[in-house]
Length: 438
Image (cartoon, rainbow, N blue to C red):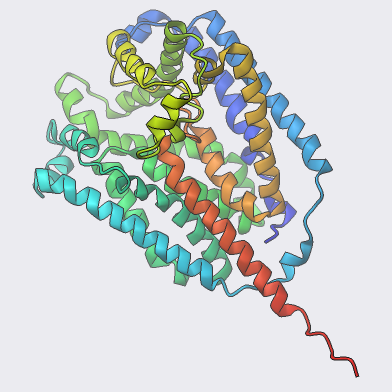
């Protein structure tokens, strides 16, 4: 499924721009902010030093080298045949997979929401909407307590379902997927508002928007030029979403403590999530050093149900570092701002030299995903929007290989397999039958 080259020229979709520039800016701001402001705005000490800033700049350089290396590697790859552009599949198998994924996602949400409401009752909903103090924190507590291993995580299948839905909408028309996608959006919105998981809404929306830009996009006129300013629009949108959700989450409590401006409060809090993530990462790097085991970068393996812990222990790992991280953040930082960043974790996993090699590999891999996405490769179209979304949050946490992503990855690979089978089947049907010899 080839996309037009003009639709692939959106500059901000390049992984270099989405990671390197924000990383350098946030790292410099984190270093420049005086310790007194850390205490004033986020109630924690400053741990981020000039050496940590230098490490961040080395990460940006290593990632850039990886991106450049991928460009040369990609130019040497054999291009796939363009015959798939002539195929016109019916997308029957993909539609069935889309609805199967939707059913699994809705089932997981119903079980999870049901387990929470069983303990709180329906009265918690109007309490949250009124902004009653403590209501949202009760739901946040129950969000984890009511989670069922192997069931709740299936809500993450919705990420792949959303991408499959956008693909089908672009191929068959939106009428076939409008209501299923609307239901998925509604359930995710409820999760974002009542369980304070803003990330869940971003996980669903951002990859779908990126895929839509590539498959359809805005072809001409003022809107086409406006796309170039999408990062600025995205920052405003993120701030608006954050302000909306923070009103229900914590504004009730802090307004009682003397806060008078919701907009200023949310601006400080939102910027704090990124600044304190870098600060926490520096703290953990100083305290833990090189652990010599890929705890963070292969997190999904160690959190795999039943066997993950056994595999980790058999390879020389343990659950001690995770417990130690919690203790360090609780004692030395602010538990409200506990993100460990997705930057320094590579150094705790592999050391400085190994971490920089990892960033070269990581940049190379993501740039290859992006180049495949540009060409309209099925794997690129399905995988890169998800990877792009992960990169936008790289400063806060190492998302792409976290335990949270396994169900999404599994469904996306199933989607790729089904799409390729449908395209292959359509090509075979278009071939003329060989004539029998006379």
